[in-house]
Length: 169
Image 1 (cartoon, rainbow, N blue to C red):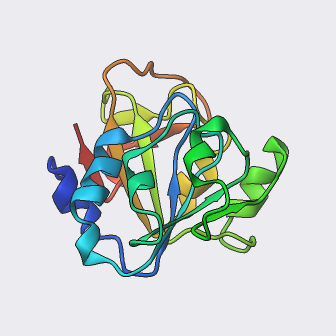
Image 2: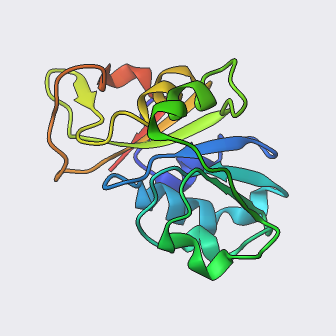
């Protein structure tokens, strides 16, 4: 179940999938770069990205195959304003759990998240829990990237390591 290669991990994402990408201070950059490297595998992927703070490598390939949905029109998307591959869906932070739940309007087939290093077989989402926890718990495919700088936090963001379909460094 556990893989150490990001490119191998992202190959499990099916073509046409809606993929949640954790944002804020915990964007899984290695997994996103692997998606860019493997982009020829897909014809269409919809990346849902709330709370994004930085421009990402996937932005270099809008519509080829990446399409983007964001709930906050942050400056990270300024290079894509007006592009048909970008949809801005304004939402309050308190709406995000409902939006990404399996019975909500934006259920996700996969989730890419960042976690802290394992402690006793468990990891946590660290400081970015609110918008991430529902897709991390409910998506059929969940890929995690370990960030050694992310602290272990207690509460709703805790997971057993074997919850994830793949874990990459």
